[in-house]
View 1: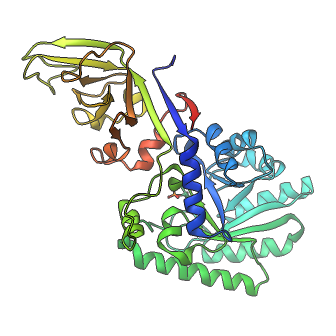
View 2: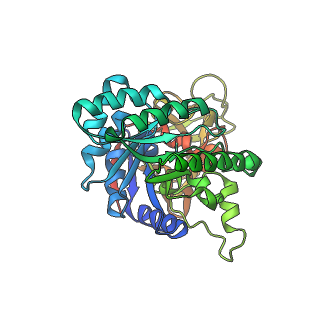
Length: 383
Ligand SMILES: *Cc1c(COP(=O)(O)O)cnc(C)c1O
């Protein structure tokens, strides 16, 4: 390990998660693996081939740059769908690459059609409908405009999908809103059908949508967090296990994050440790300095709260999280030496630090902890 930390990605865990989702969703429904935000911090270049090995042939990203990164590492002729940002400058190349993309305003469709005519190809579009999330999506009057554009340019538009996004299916508190969204979506769907606009794929569900609302599955589900081994919320896991004998979590964490001890110190009683006065020693202690900090995604709110593993022992982080370093209390761990392995996320001996250890102490979501992992940490696939 030459860098300050590295990330290990478990091939077996990916297999478990993909198989679990596929088995629950059913083989008739296509799974699009969501790999936005650098594959939820895991690394696009490593995760896409792993997903492909497990039969995934559809990938969802947020922007054009991510789509290109997926394209460069895919072996198969899989489909790549851009759900968010494409600059006007990149629309042409989006078509050249054959990427599918969400259309949430008529302007983007017009621009795409113009390029498609020039390139003599078809723009592969997914019409994103505003159903109640109130973020991006075609409004009623925009749908009419889009329908006109489609009818006038049939040779240059392929309606790959008609889709929407649900506003919080991971919590039952949003139940009514989700049901209203699905109703609205279905209404648009039948309206489109009456205009002879029939999409290849109807899709509305993220992980929580697919698991908590079977009627939201349609033809394709866009699954992110669960493929990485996490439930979108505790509630979603509870909902899944409540009527089952086996209450264990069927998903497996893919990621492990490790570092090394950079320095070992012995500090007397009555000393402050690190910046400021947030930690005062109550006795003689030993500390290990670890080259991980908030610039690497280790949230500062874990100051005096986080834990790391050394020699299979759980050690408290003391003092504030620095930009590049944390200090752990290793008083009760014998023989810690410079260079010893430190686990930040993962297992060591009988101990485990889960991502939920982070989210319990900060107001971060598991999505957020993962997405903050820097791209420049070295990643490696292991079994
Ligand atoms: C991120 C995202 C998903 C995947 O969400 P998960 O909760 O990670 O499964 C699906 N659809 C859209 C539009 C998204 O932005």
